[in-house]
Image 1: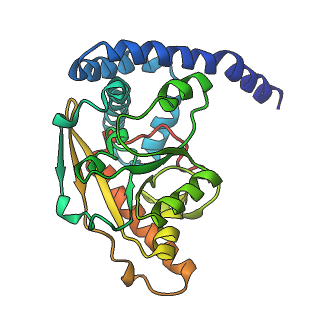
Image 2: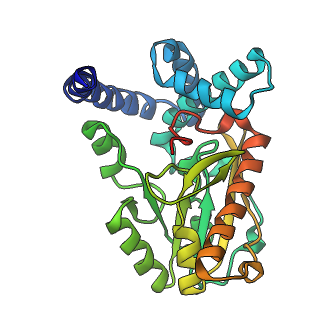
Length: 293
């Protein structure tokens, strides 16, 4: 109990301000470089400092949980790829509005008509900050929900500045849920990273292990009769990306009462995201407490 209190005080007084100051330094350092060089530098820097970051143990434990039959060498390879991917994301962040030429969008024909509301569901894969990019193609803003950063200074530098990609960025919670409903009722677009952990939600399998899973995509889609469109992003090489707009889910095939339909929709979404992670496990964000239930 006492050790937990001391750790929390240390994080609030020392670690979180340090994170914030480091975020500011890195942001402006990366901003001074070209997108390609900034991405490469971020990846190499992440690998260099990774031995000093305790979060990597959690990531490695998660990898061993999901791929227990893989060799230690294969598991370590995934961890290093994931660390480099995170570093590249940091290096690319100041250039989000400049790297459209590095993005190849597939499946544009799967986008609904211009005046129809819909929900993108995506995951923490490759550079997930680029997932709103298809909104630029159809000239429609994409509202997205995010988890607030623990470090207030880092939150300020990364979130309070205007995003180069059009659309409102709202922290998750009651306000975020109300804004999502408002946007969809106004025939807008909402984007959700559906692989994030919640303290609430429903417990269903994700990558073969039970995990608390958000239900908002299914609930809003059923409530407002709007499509759910899976959105996959893949890092091809360096800062080259494929964004794949998949066909919308067939919501009519989910039968039963509301609770059963919501659960089965989220099972399908979890299974789909699982297949994406298995395609490129080194591009997923293994560092969060996804299976803490």
